[in-house]
Amino acid sequence: MTKADVINAVARRTGMAHKEAAEAVDLFLKAVREALEKGEKVSLVGFGTFYIKEKNPRQGRNPRTGARIRIPRKRVAAFKPGRAFRQMANRPATEPAK
Image 1 (cartoon, rainbow, N blue to C red):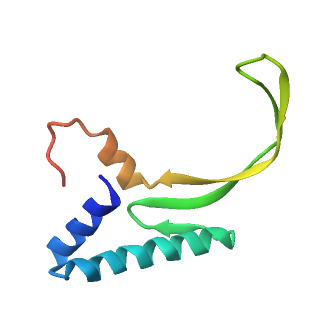
Image 2: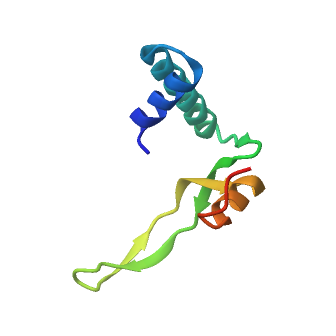
């Protein structure tokens, strides 16, 4: 599902105009991005939590030359699904949603 698909689903399910739905989705994504930039967690009950994770520096190898390289410390966005989300993901495909 793409961002455009999400916008279409929001517009269809809420009765909003396509332009309003696009703006709502953009505002939501901007709010999540801004919170993560500040180092805050974004928790959506029943869905999951977005957060920034620190990755320690480590040794790696250049796949072309085999030379050792140092991979520096970095911050990455991470997502931990909530319990309801995990249960839905692990339900057999033939079982109806609750």
